[in-house]
Length: 257
Image 1 (cartoon, rainbow, N blue to C red):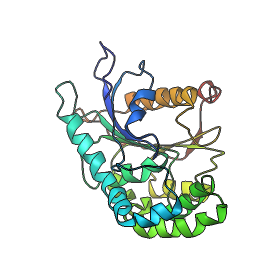
Image 2: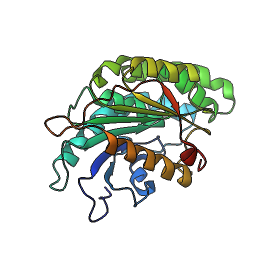
Image 3: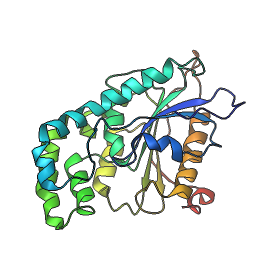
Image 4: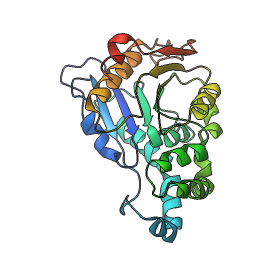
């Protein structure tokens, strides 16, 4: 948990899940100047996150349980944030980055509290996404194909295409790297097709990495500005924008990537 800076007027609260090796540390890399409360939740996995193929196979039931619990962990994080006295429950956003995007989308089936959804470097087509991601991690690379197929069988309930309807009526922002080496472009376009009400942004560069502090600062500012632009409904809650279609990242933002 990282509270908004003192004096922030009506700050948003962002509940987020990053990639597997980022977890709850994601709250520490959001620039403190961003006027928002930030709650980063971790993946529900207590063991090592650098396992060999043999170790993964030996732990398959526990791996599957942890993966399928991730949306509930996010929903619990939303409930915990909403219970804080300094949090405006009508200004809570759910954010998923990289492999955190599928659980964030699925979490909308478990909680209707979030008033906005942000997915950064996400994709539909979970098996292709996992295969592309594993190819950057495994040696020999051919292991990525059978392991991705197995992982998809275990985690199919998190397939983003199954949960896009849960985001209907929720203002949504999709940001993707144009040279993303880990998220296949067809999957990115499939996700966008399933969320036709979303504002979509193509940013220059490759897949977001937790060490890219400059890039994270740029994205944090872009997300914060988008949240602040959301129109309010009569009850004070933001409403979905009618904007859709791809747009380029403004040059002032893209240059910092």
